[in-house]
Structures are given as C-alpha cells and as structure tokens.
Amino acid sequence: MNDVVLTEVRGHTLLVTINRPRAANSVNSDVHRGLGQAWEMAEAEGDIRVVVLTGAGESTFCAGADLKALGTSGPDGVTPPETAHWGFAGVVRHHISKPIISAVNGNALGGGTELALAGDLVVAADTSTFGLPEVKRGLIAGAGGVFRLITAIPRAIAMELLLTGAALSAEDALRWGLINRVVPRPDVLTTALELAEIIAGGAPLAVQATKTIARGIVDGGVPTEAQGWTLTEEALERLSTSSDTMEGITAFLQKRDPIWSGR
Image (tube, rainbow, N blue to C red; front, top):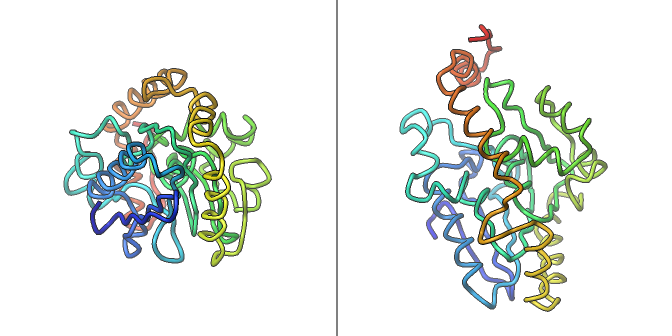
C-alpha cells in the first residue's frame, strides 16, 4: 500500500495497520488510499478470508480525520475526490464480503469509533475508549457514526452518547454490545488474529454470504443506509459554513473551551 498503511498476510488473514503513531493514527489522503486499496486487495484475493485492522503504537487506534491535512488542503486532504465513494478512511462506505475485525489497541474516539462501526467485530484493549465527541467541535459524526451507533447499541444509550459527546470505557462498550472482547492491551492483536483464524476455518463462500446477508450488502452498497448518508451529507454541508463549526475546530486546536454563537 504505502508507508502509512502496512499490510501483511498471515495465513488466510490480511493484517492492516494504520502506521501514523506520531499523528495518533489520524486519517489523511494517504491513509484513505492505503486502507481503500487494502480492502480492494482483500476482496480480490481468494486466499484472504478475514481482515484485521489495527493502529500502530500503544495509545491510539485512530483519532479520526487529520485536522492539519483538513486545514491545509480542505476535504481533499482527507478524502481524495477520485475515491470519495469509498467514504472516510477509504472504508466506511467500502463494503466487502470478507469479515473485518477491528483490533482496537488504544483510544478510538470520533473517526476511530466510526471505523469500528464500519467493521464486523471488535477486540479492544482494556484501556481503550470509544465515543463520538463531534458535537463538542461543532460537527456531527459524518462517517456513518450517527446512524450506525443507533443500530449498534440500545437507542437511549446511543442518543446520550451522540448528544453529549461523552466517551465509553472499554468495559462499558462491551456491556452495551458495541464490542466483542476486552483484553489487556498486549493481547489485543493476538486475540483478534485468533478470532480471525476461527472465522477463516469456516467455509469461505458461506462466511462471505452470511456477512453479505447480515449486513444487507447489495452490489457493494447497503440500501438501508442510503437515507442516513443523504441526511449526513446535507447536515455536513450546512455545518461547513457555520460559525460554530469554525469555532469548535479552532478551540480544539487552541486547547480551550469553545464559545458557541448558534450561527
């Protein structure tokens, strides 16, 4: 792929690593392309039966969009227009038939949680946190988080998280069914790979058909999510010109509390 996205084939599993630990494994256009290409590779290669996605380092799985790239190059600095159909990080709208396990080795706030929601199973470190804090930045969880969280966990819990921007500990994420396993951080990748090996031991076509039906994938898309994406895109377009969005991002970068104007 490229140096910010590493791939390694282990048996029938494709291990994919976001390799920007100094930037909290945030997503820029190079990460988007690398992850999207890894998904294409996984779908095309018959010997690959499962994908495991993780982040480099010990503290952060993925911190979401790279605000520096966004500030200097605009949306194209995060999501290149030629592969925008793949969605954020090259994967959130890039549906493949191979099961995807997120090995969450650290914090997964914002886009990191949205990456986990885009996959199928999650193994998390006991020190990791999940959440969608976008409302605290004047934004919404625009990579599918708003409508996917509602279907992933009980409605009341999801609404509280979405409206407050609060984070969940790994144990609470497990309690509410957002993730599958909580293990000590050194064991995250091993546990995810062991789970992948179990899945890869099933009949490949049957596993792929099961995922496709369960996720409602039709011709590479999920028709039941169409309205969610439309509403998300319309909201993001409105927010992109709001004073509050600019204030939220500026306050975050300046490490201060935002002063909202409601405009």
